[in-house]
Image (cartoon, rainbow, N blue to C red; front, side, top):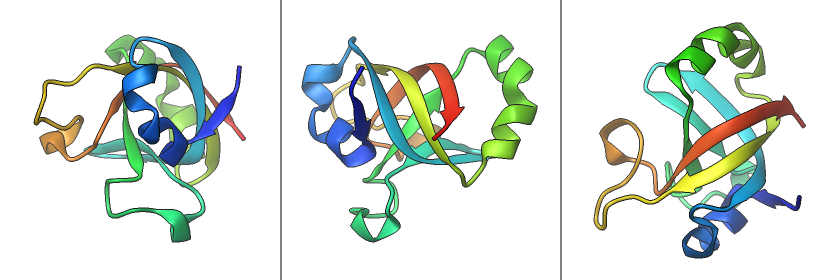
Length: 109
């Protein structure tokens, strides 16, 4: 499976909705910020414009919390699918993210 940068995935958002893909970036695992950010930071388009909210099943999140804490601010590859968002609404906490990805796998890059 091809590995996309966060910016590449967001640029292809409409064609990727519902399809499985992998994205490489930097993981943020903090309260109200479970997301992957484009790397390098110098190529980011804004605070949230180059990031994807990560959606994990609560049971999955609980079982992987320690691992995700270790990966915080590290380069990762995330596998999953984009969720379709309602027009005019963003994803994640307070709708700040341009996309949401349902996660099936996270690993260190």
